[in-house]
Image (cartoon, rainbow, N blue to C red; front, side, top):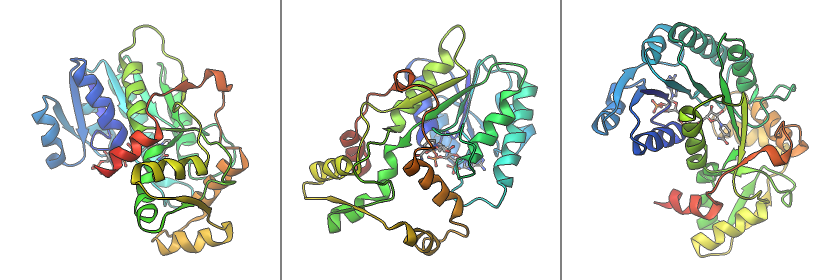
Length: 285
Ligand SMILES: NC(=O)c1ccc[n+]([C@@H]2O[C@H](COP(=O)([O-])OP(=O)(O)OC[C@H]3O[C@@H](n4cnc5c(N)ncnc54)[C@H](OP(=O)(O)O)[C@@H]3O)[C@@H](O)[C@H]2O)c1
């Protein structure tokens, strides 16, 4: 039995699908019983837990062969990341109580960066869980290709990809969530020792021009990448409803300035199989 948090989301869902298709038993950890029903119909046990509820998480993790930890995304955290700190503490307490033989945690490219930014939430998670008295693995994937979901409407109607990753001709590691889920599932079931940190990217690094070309190919119309001027980001993010755009801007600066990057040498970064066009097509379904 493997307990999968975040199972109603992109990566957790992909992890669960791979495990189920391999005949493994899955416990779906959800915060909303209604959302658990679809997984119960697929043969999963269902456990209810919020990611900041240590007791509920401990029950959800008890008696399993492995746990997949998906820290919920939070693009607009309070200063000092109190939400992530509370979740990290609860997950740590629950794992320490349940002591599953295998733990795989979703982290991110750049979790090792010392500069504060949105991804510091995962730096804090790694710090909180690294000192547990049993092995915990951190999966650090690249920028998700599925982030393109927010760009498709504009590409379709205006033929423009508004890019925050700059310069436009710099190739950036990106990865499909299907690859992230598959690798997480492999790490959960693989016998023997599992590395402490696994970094993961897709089959090719992509410039923004290459992403625009892929959008053009799939949408059947010309699409060009345009850099969004940095001085406008704060106003744009506030207009989208963010209270504090600074951590997100710091994260984008980290990608663009190169201090959010893989920690290991390029040759050690695992490569996924799913390409950008396949992901764009899946987002149109
Ligand atoms: N986007 C990127 O480019 C990127 C790159 C590297 C790493 N990451 C990391 O990947 C993770 C996001 O994965 P994803 O795209 O699969 O996320 P997602 O699709 O947004 O799914 C989030 C999941 O977390 C659950 N959830 C949210 N808040 C919760 C709470 N308080 N208690 C319990 N469950 C809660 C959601 O359940 P409901 O259905 O109930 O909402 C859902 O199952 C983040 O940790 C992020 O840092 C992202």
